[in-house]
Length: 201
Image (tube, rainbow, N blue to C red; front, top):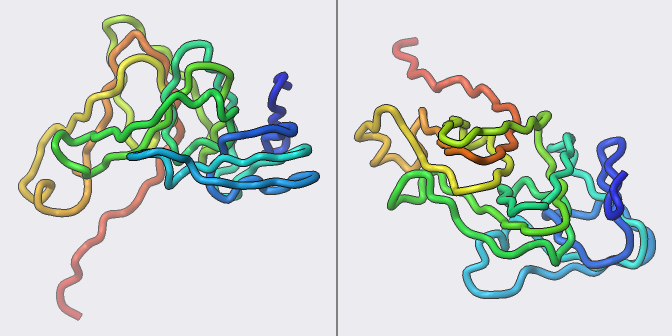
């Protein structure tokens, strides 16, 4: 139980107020609710988040991402925008696009910045909190990244092939390097078999 949010049975419940919420939220609410998009120019997390104003108890949940994590924002926290479920709207301080491959949009993703209050995330698998000591490095797959404190990560690929530059997708072995001191929240990854070309009948 948190003073502002209760996470139970796969739902994040908040009271009446103005909230930053993922698309398709809330799942249920008492009273009335109004929705509006984020305002401003070049709002990087606009496609992932809305502002909702409710007059009663509000329940947020995402059936495709059933695992919820409460992240306190005592220090500045950066969260992958697509994984934000609900947070106080006043906690958001900005957003940006993380370009994992320099000078390219391949593998890039929007993140939302929080500097106070809390944020509840929704992920496809359980989330764990990893502490990176000063001078240490943590490598995380981009799709497993949920949130972090400290400096933004740097992209790393062991071998950059010509097709990685020409094809409209991120390199297969792309990783994010987080340099300590920082805290990183990560979730599991999904194995996707490679497509194999079949010759003959």
